Length: 180
Image 1 (tube, helix red, strand yellow):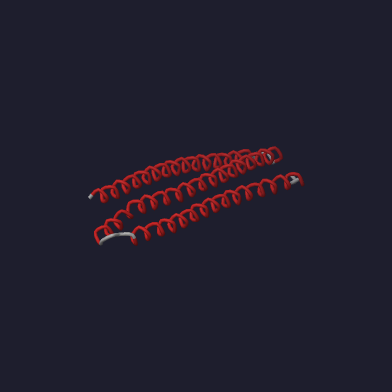
Image 2: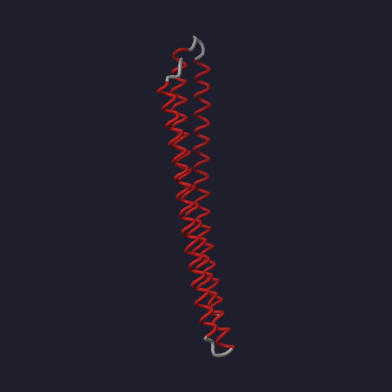
């Protein structure tokens, strides 16, 4: 059995497409991170200026302390929102990269099974057992990969639920401190 130039070209094209998909996903995530960071710095700067002006206009020490305490709640809220935004971008990029990896694995499995079928047609008599064993091992590996993928997705869902719960807890704590 020979490899044709068309097969080499198709394999190269698939590899380049996968590389470009990964690069595009990473660039989009980087762009989103940069926007989040730029907005956070801009908002922090604007808040700093506004807070400084408010403190300079304080009439007495009591008002000064009261103003300082009032700045804590919005800062905590913004920190939580920033963290959540960063997490969402990271989770989205991870999901996209997982999709690319899953597509590549499926393509590889399909090509490998096709190759085994071609080899088995040209193989000497009695090699059917070896080909069947390899196909069985591939099926077992695919089953294990599917199970690992399911477990990873469940772990991701649990982590997202924990992040949401922690966010709500942090918000509740900061509101409780403000009320006190």
